[in-house]
Image (cartoon, rainbow, N blue to C red):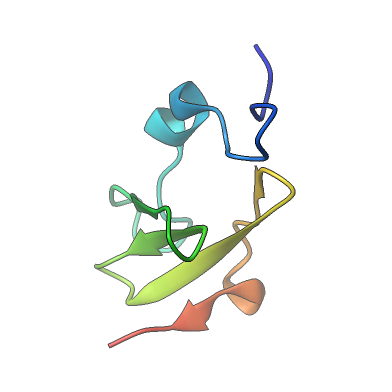
Length: 63
């Protein structure tokens, strides 16, 4: 299984497995901003070159 597609988007199967590292809740993929959103933690985790960066220190806070 490839971690990313040719267009740089993360593999959909990988996204199904990932959860928020803080709350263990489901993440929502924001295609426009290329981020994984944790509504429970109010954080947006970036995706760089198709790889989700699941470090809280790399996430940005959202409302």
